[in-house]
Image (cartoon, rainbow, N blue to C red; front, side):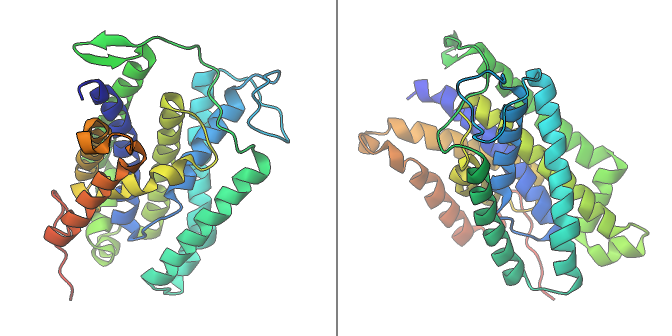
Length: 305
């Protein structure tokens, strides 16, 4: 089972980053975004498009040649594009819904429809086969009993650093404090001089950038697929629910717990030959948490007035 710990940490950092982005958006906007996975996939697809060689025989895009840009530059560009995409979604789609007082169920249905629409758009411009970033193969190395490639160890460290920076941003910057104020009460935030519409827009941009970066991390660890975000969306929801919906620290914790549990469950005796069912344990845990402590481990109960 110990050999699965490395894979669990890698999956954990993916789920944790995705959960923080989802939890942040929900906390400020109260939107359960089922299109979150497609923003994750968008980040990975754009990074692959920017970084792959134009002469590559493994073209992910059927209709366009990749650009062959430096990989680090590709990550930055794809993350920025995801932020722009998220901002456009808020301005064009979700702000009008909010101003016209559409209910939560209606908005939820919109996000589900958006998710399906975006996945089919990706298929229009991309092949259905998985592709990898243009990075050289590496052998696994033993790090105190945990086997990882040097690149995956770097990914793990970068993921931790990004989550710490997100926590510092939310806790100590003026914008981060404004996000938390809008999360607690939009009305009180407006009264205190905070432009809630602007903060919601910034939240969409920030959350989408973090989701896009999550997609790049996922693509480096595994591969890039048109439906890669959708495949881990339920695990991200599980991590968010476990840690506490709307709490970034809780989402980090929940994401890591879910990622490690999913991979460690592969080594269980009763899972032998049924590894495709490894997500069942994480989803069962999510259901139990919803029944026993609906606000999650670190979440707070909301009073309904």
